[in-house]
Length: 94
Image 1 (spheres, rainbow, N blue to C red):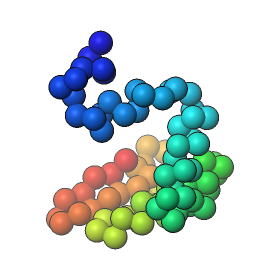
Image 2 (image 1 turned 135 degrees about the horizontal axis):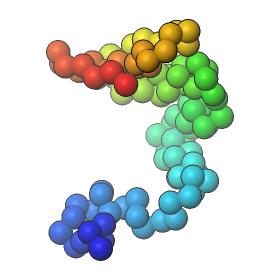
Image 3 (image 1 turned 90 degrees about the vertical axis):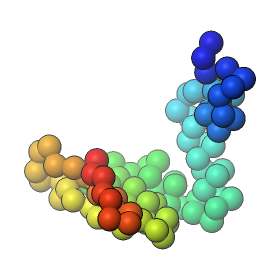
Image 4 (image 1 turned 180 degrees about the horizontal axis):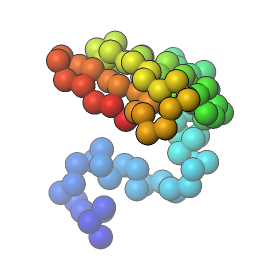
């Protein structure tokens, strides 16, 4: 199986070392958030929906101080990217 290939970097193999259930991912994310001092922001991402979810994700992304994070979608327009990240003259929207 390619996901268990010994030549693959360990950071790519790590996610396959635990159950892929969403509850397990949520628990791991909360634990890592606690270690990083951003547990409440991670919890908010897990619990929010709609535009509140987008706000929570933007707040979490802004923890990376090197990124400029812009919320593009106001929740009223269809097919508009939700968030744009900028770093050193490059940008990506999703």
